[in-house]
Image 1 (tube, rainbow, N blue to C red):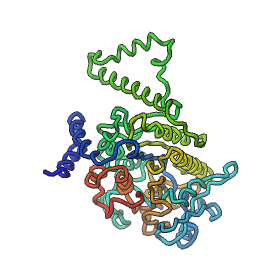
Image 2 (image 1 turned 30 degrees about the vertical axis):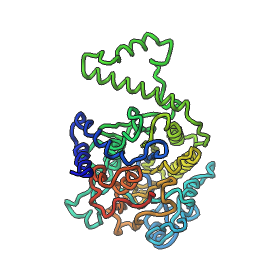
Image 3 (image 1 turned 60 degrees about the vertical axis):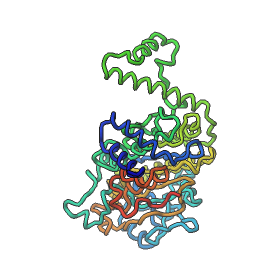
Image 4 (image 1 turned 135 degrees about the horizontal axis):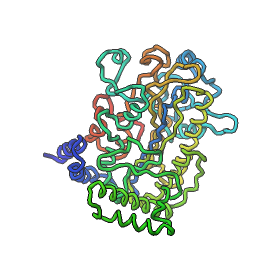
Length: 467
């Protein structure tokens, strides 16, 4: 058996649901094979940063047609939600960049209003300078799906379409039969790329998530606190010495009689060790001078920038970060609420990109957006309802930016791309979106189907927005 066949079989066994105890040994074989060609040290550093927009962002009012048949369809479908052209910042492709597939011009909702003169201009500027790309009409799919196929009983569709929890899970796992996320599965394959294999390569500042859940590597949760986590008072407070000593005694290796107690002790000791490791690294890392918005999202992305600055001390060559923003379930008061949400996203992303430039890693860090789903073309009078496909941004110097990828959907209610009730059928799958990012991150093409099991159902695995 040649090396490629051996590797393929080993990985399939490891990711196929076998017990974690036997998986660990198999994964060590996988590590040696998959990381052999990946550069080690800071020269080979790469990081993915997922910004998840919880609630389902209304991408129809994020990237809006300016003219042509798309503008006419938009005006006919949006009702009370339609935005005037004066509220849009044109998204003009760079020289050689792909224009929207329908031949129309599009703009980014400016989100400029009283007290916010910046709005989304920072994100528009990233697109205009080739540092950001728009990936059009992405969503959960099992296979390419047309409207007649969607209406055919028994055709393979993602489970529980239009449900927040189910679609968040499918976006983050890309398979309904697994509790492991596609980011976690990538980490399981590549974690030995890092010289430090104790601290997980998957770190979340945006809360626990399924995307980073792996069989071998699980997410390490931090918060925007200056030390990366709230200090463990029982360990750090000198006045609490008796309790601290008792805790350390309880958690001493093999001091516990029951296996659950031993598992708890190992988990607690690991948390204490990781906390100390991260706090020390952050304290000694280069200062990040870039100013971030004073928002929850701004604070999360600033912490990611600080962790990237500490990458060498932490022994990291590959990292996957997760941050999040909420409030995008805009059934009500959308025209009042959506601009503020988009402005926060744009200002925070622009600041984070500037921080990667400051740190000299703009070529090595790629940020991408994700969300439960898009929203309906039609208005419910005060907002929009749960949809399906939606547009997303990918940002970084490794992105082939200033370009639109994929097909713009028809915005006609009841048209060829409307599954019903104004819910747009995606034309690009989460599998293709994730696989394009995974290829850049270091996952070989022969292993892609183990990360994204339905990728073979689509005509191309790599959409082409990464260099």
